[in-house]
Length: 103
Image (cartoon, rainbow, N blue to C red; front, top):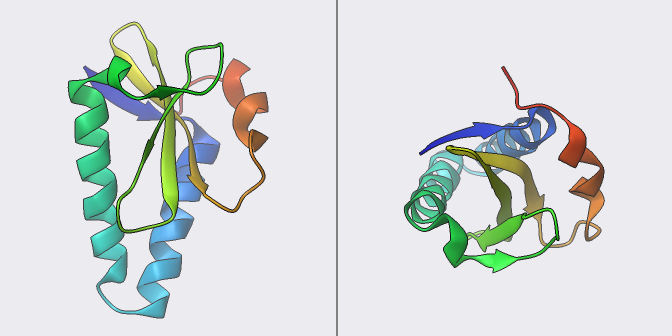
């Protein structure tokens, strides 16, 4: 299975990495590592994480950072719909569900 970001989700992820790297050198790399670990788990067991929307969107949280990856499986692709901070308004990403995967 492969994975792809929606454009807004990728922007959220990259902005979060920049934010932490600006706060402390190397912390952005730690966030990347945490993201990659959670993504690996989601790719290994895509149906194993909490269903949060009837469209099939599921959620897996990062362990050391207050973020979650929201994703859904479309064919053989895990589509990342949001990389959301726990304090962002819930469900803000729902309007993205009709959009195409970033190319």
